[in-house]
Image (tube, rainbow, N blue to C red; front, side, top):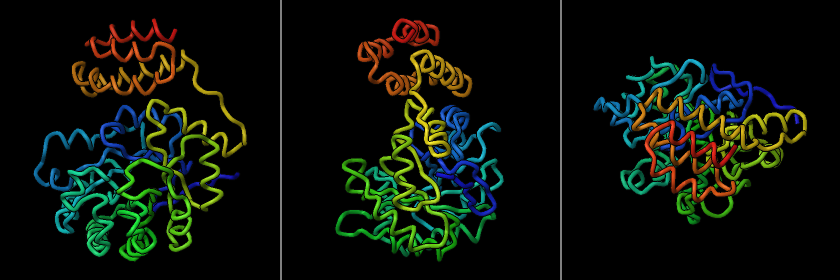
Length: 323
């Protein structure tokens, strides 16, 4: 398959294989690694529009980017057109290329505030938010939606059309309902229907966990790009593997234990650099669990990792397990 660059507004994405936003995962260090492995676009963790308006200190850290990771998409969530558009205007001069709006998050505390995937139940409000943001800022605006809120309200096509009319430059579609969360299989047929219903780029999301799955989604749905999220946890190499397979049809071997060891150390160094030893090490523990899943003695490693507090101690444990 010949892959083409993806154009979103005035932003050119050389490889249309995209790191999806994940709360607690797609922080700056992880994004840098995924970009190094070929991700054409990386996305921040979702940021609350209200938190921006209130100048929340923790939110500033979520919006920090590194010159080496561009292009970057910054994802906002909220429920009010005025507050979301005002927040967008406040941050437009920050170094990111695309502003994404979240209509897909299934987490109860988000949904209960009529944010995230709750907006799938109110497409008019979602369109009003997008329209207000598009009028406020110059950067391209995209939106991430789901198949629907539940199986009784599968409305991704309707929502996508409204978003296009409101001015978005691209749409990412997760082929599950909010009710499904991440269970069951993603419905790629609804993604195909959205692609056929709009004229702007469509990015498919859901169950792309291998190079062959990425090629299959692009072939079956006609999407302009694929978004990889959970399958990238502990596996930033997946972007290089997908791009190589799409371009050549060849499958790159999985990372060796030494490569896994080196990547963990690189991410840990970045985590400590940006977040400090105390926070960086504690947040790194879950990543190590993802990196080492399936390795011999990985369960013991995960238990022991939680008992140590320094980079040197973790390095020694990893050496014992992986090298």
